[in-house]
Length: 89
Image 1: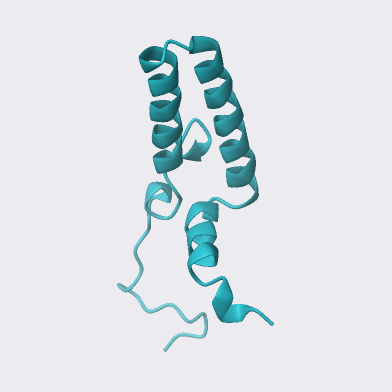
Image 2: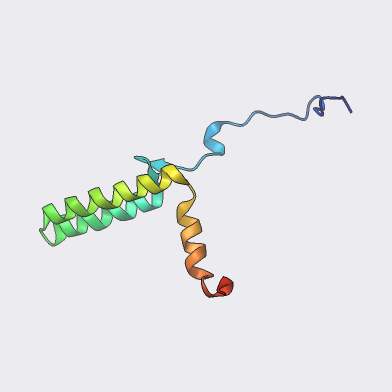
């Protein structure tokens, strides 16, 4: 084995898209789709388009803020809510 730790022929380059989270407008894809669907339902279905626009703006802004801090925040929140009583003191 060479001193550098690399064996010839056992390296492969990975594309960045294979290792990073899928974001839509800076927010996680699933949360952005859910937020847009809820805002569209409020804006178009209930005919409250200003409230729907405000809901979308607030929800997307919060999701982008959380994704900047941790792109995997959604699975972490779900896991926290599921195991809340398990780690209580």
